[in-house]
Image 1: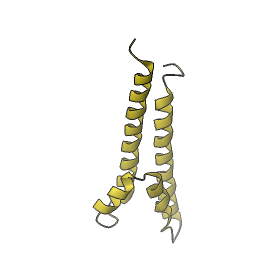
Image 2 (image 1 turned 180 degrees about the vertical axis):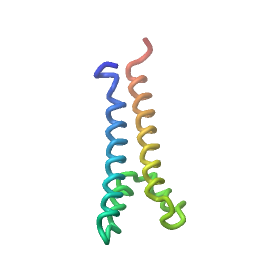
Image 3 (image 1 turned 120 degrees about the vertical axis):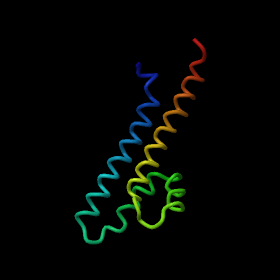
Length: 94
């Protein structure tokens, strides 16, 4: 994979890595602090707009960290897919 062809992977992979690192940070903050109630806001903010749907669909706190992480990873895949299609369209037929 050349430099020009790998940019969708780098963009989407960077976003997925940010989601995973934020998830780990939220989990560590929640385990180490007595009041880490705002730690999860970072993950929600990072995964907007999907997290807004997740907030409406979640009953309370049940599995919210896992759900928001999965939403973020799904958004990373969608970003890769759309950017790859854009790259392929700009490259034209070979």
